[in-house]
Length: 108
Image (cartoon, rainbow, N blue to C red; front, side, top):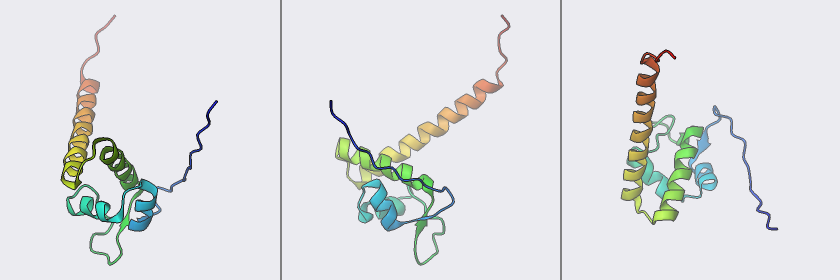
């Protein structure tokens, strides 16, 4: 029987993460995270601040980016494209659920 240990971190969605924390928790180097910021995939809480901080939702995006990079050996441009397309798919699925919710239900 094989056991796998997993490290967990509890995040407060209102507690900002620094770029270094985001890198540590996501597994992506800060340089690659910064590429995602420059390409508009990750958005700092205050883009004009001297020190960039990120919301907890950026961690989910960064971890997805790390998995995509590892699984498909994507370069920064490929990561940006894949993450942008995944985000668009989520938006379209949400719109579709909204439309379905407004449709009349057939009576049985």
